[in-house]
Structures are given as C-alpha cells and as structure tokens.
Length: 253
Image (cartoon, rainbow, N blue to C red; front, top):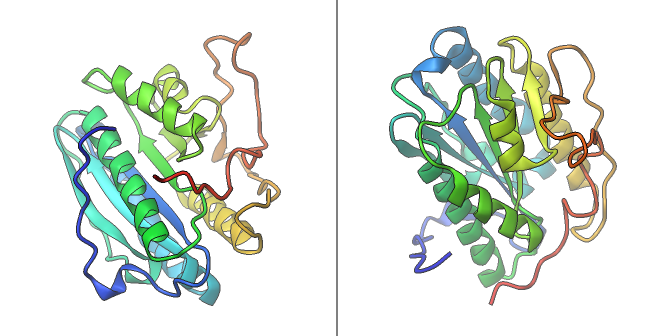
C-alpha cells in the first residue's frame, strides 16, 4: 500500500480502555440490487441484533471496535471504527451493481489505519478481521485486491473472511479468502452473526499471542463452503482459528 493518507482520530470515543488489547472488525457488505428483498432486510436485522447482543458483555464492549463499508455501483463507509456499543443502527438499501475492488481496498486501508492507531496509543492489537458478505459476482477486476489480501494475510496484517449469500460465486470468494469461506443457504443471518459473537467471546478470554479454539458452527443455515474449484490445492478446513489468525504484530514501522 502506497501513499496512504491516515484519517484523523480526534473523536474521544475512538478508543476505550487503551490498556487492554483491542480488536478491529470491519464488515464489508454487498448492497447491490441482487441483495434486494429478504436478503437486505435480514442483513439489516442481523447487524442490529449483533450490536445488541454483543453489548450485553462488558468486556466485549471494551475490546471490540466495528466499522461497516457497503458496496454496490460505488462504495461508502457507513460506519467508521467505533467501540461496538457506539455502532449506529443500520438500514441499508439494495441497489445497483457490484463494484467490489475499491470497497475491499477501503476496508483494508481502514483496518491498517486502525492497527497503526492502536500502536500509537500503546494499545495491544489483535489481528483485525474483515468479513465480506456478498451474493453475486463482482462487476470489476478484483485481481489487485486478491494480491493485496494475500500479501497482508502472509504478513500477519489481517484475517479476511467471507460469507456467501445463496447464489454467490464460490470461486471468487475462495480467490479472495482461501479456505475462510462460509455459505448462507437461506436468508436468515442469525446463525452467522451468532458465530461471530461466539468468536469474539473466545478471543476475549485469550491473550493476543494465544491460539483460541474454534467455535463450532452447527445447523443447516450456515456452513463451511466445500465447493472447491481445485481440490488438490484447497481442502476442507473447519478449524478457522488456526495459528495465523490471532497474534501480536509489532511490525508497523
């Protein structure tokens, strides 16, 4: 990443309890016309319920910070990084095409900036997550975004994951995320956001250098995507919390 202009972090709500480790989670959401109807309605409900349920735990409110980026024919930062309890209620609308690459770049810029911010304030960061939720095939070239994700993953800078809504392009998501792909077989996001909440809870009981156990993902609504395009290269892996997922990274020079 070159010539990155850092955002200003002047809001006193930007960080809480700097003396404890923090986690940055960016939701990257497809709001193209393909998500119209039940999909966008359930996504809105799932995000709003996610905030309500996460905030029931005091430690989570101190650790987790969330940002939201949407993309359709363009992209928009819906919510800059804030402590999860300060997330605003969302009411996203589905319209337009699916220009994905600029939105991915935006999300990666944001988690990079946030990690730098943690280091500048003396806060220990967990590795940030970007979670892409999408239904369709991108209308633009995402090869540059794929290369950047791969580079950041290899350097321990991010964990990039995806949830494919029924009808999604499996190959595209595996190109982006490798094995960290989940699939939604209906339109109910409840099980997925429950899994995210369980994952956050597991992290909160560990130190940044420790490797937490995987949260089980049960039921028929959400599952690991086994629709591999090259079984010799990619195999089924349900241990999503492998040793590369969470850890301290001090190489932010």
